[in-house]
Image 1 (cartoon, rainbow, N blue to C red):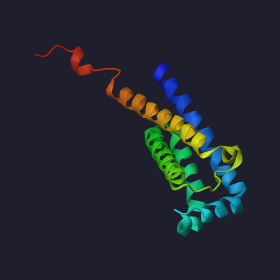
Image 2 (cartoon, rainbow, N blue to C red):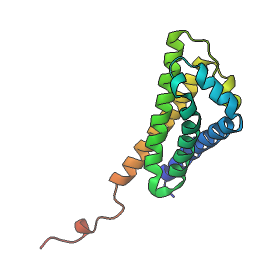
Image 3 (cartoon, rainbow, N blue to C red):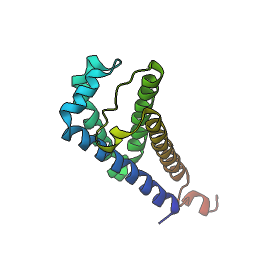
Length: 151
């Protein structure tokens, strides 16, 4: 197995672990998660929809990452979702809001600043996976046209 395949596997496993944990924690403490969303100045009007949509999206991305044929789409989706979460956290920091994180589980215990660093790790992680997947597709294992003389 090539090193890049192993690296992509590790990257996907890290993302899967995070997303399964986060989605499950949100659903296990659904009332607290939903309440936290209603307290946010930016997303309160959408709290009821987001309370289901966020964990569902996280599980959907997990499915994309697990299936080899959709792994690239899963990496892009993971990159996008973590970027959106990071932008939201930055907006919370800039607004001066002192609303606790409603991410669920131990992630809730992080400060907003720590959360940005944590999310940036997963953004870079996904970007690296995307790069490796794209690089793998551009490197054909066998080029029959180049092995035969042209006549």
